[in-house]
Image 1 (tube, rainbow over the protein chains, first blue to last red):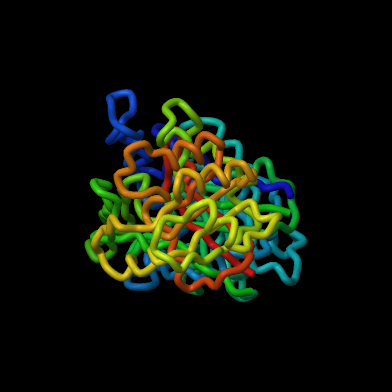
Image 2: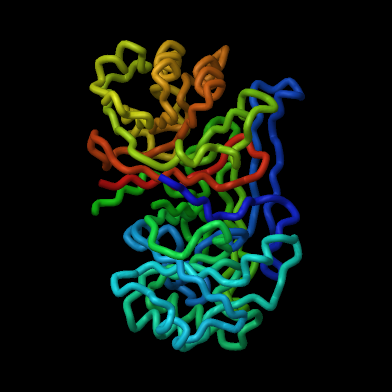
Length: 208
Length: 208
């Protein structure tokens, strides 16, 4: 069984979405200082690294992250590659060879190259609003992408997020899919179960 | 497919191991304040709630949490119930009906009742040192338990942790197994991939 870890490492200085506070790890106890154990504490923005968005992120009062459907988070997922650099359209999705039974879709794009450096790049590929509606109409449960947003930088309307989250579709952002070939895998997307949060960091595994 | 979420919710005021800082969620942006989205930041101790221990927790300089074996974290796991309240011994493990092929073992004990309140209870059930060595000798990859430590409170030697971590066995602490019957499941144990950490909060799913 080949297991792919499609989560990015959490570390100070990693790229984060504009203004998002990245990870900080502070050691509260250190064996080297005479303590019996090494014990650290972590802080980070809820949308740092690989993470999920809950409806409450853009739809005030809607479901928070601990209420996400387990059925959406665990099960078969299809990785589809989009080689072009423009935003992914409904036509692109129609032509992508997505299997009829696919309910969890992971979008592998040129974004992957951005993980090579610590800069936050704003020219990343996302979905168009029509593509988001295409996913809603077909009853998708989850969609993931390989950089820090599923929607163009500084969208004036946040149409993509609102469309997907309004339909209860789980959004994963910040995947690293570079090592994964296109195809169908079993996925476990495991966000921290943070009560009342608009999103949460997640570890995501794929396997054959 | 029945999916069990065996992770405890992360929230302020939840029980944590003595001195461990629990979760805090701070909203940096609020739609109610005129922002375009709700955006929060999270802080918590690395051993808060459901979490894994990495070797570096008790063995200074040994592997940190981002280096944990994916093969240990994902695959079949057996949930075994121990009804008595004493610490689990090698004899208990021998008599427990653990299948020969089991390499990931989840211990369901009377600890589960402690999740009913917000107090940190120190009289929890753990493993004895001999039980830890029993697991090492048989080549287990992972062991999990249903409260905040796998070892008696204020162990003078930390024998259980050092034995398990020294053998590269992944430790999960803080599981909530109350809803899960004994048996074999597929498990995904997904700790945050925090570079350099002695442990990390995790979401853990079991399914048939």
